[in-house]
Image (tube, rainbow, N blue to C red; front, side):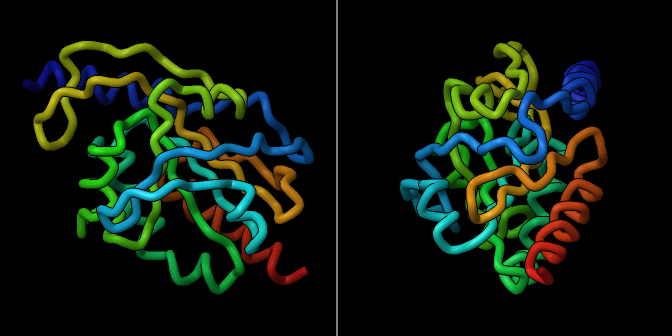
Length: 191
């Protein structure tokens, strides 16, 4: 069990350094994906979300893993601050929608305040220029359940209402990632 936890920690650490192909000023790829909020599935559209304001699109390796738990919790406890700055947040991973229904409702993490989308084949992550790793058998989540999907690298894109990327945030801790995204959307709202 300790070996599995160590293997997961190494894998998550390896995916936390971002080398995103998209840069500030690039157009963000529009996408539609199955998503969940408070355990209820819906269809998420980036285009529709941008019609309402800036969007923080954050990619993470897997629900119910150490860093992702921290990041989801930080986004959820700061949800009102993101909304006050005129921004919405969508988490994207290769998790199944069934797993995301649980994660989005979990009071310790998304807490019904954070929407998460399923990118089962990694197509959305790749469109944003992110590396996607293959499934690695034998790795379990913090609940002890096997993770049956690949991982996208942990990277956050702050997308302005016009659909262009304001900044890419990666290579920092999960809580620093959220703090930087919040700082950026506050700067946008002050303009």
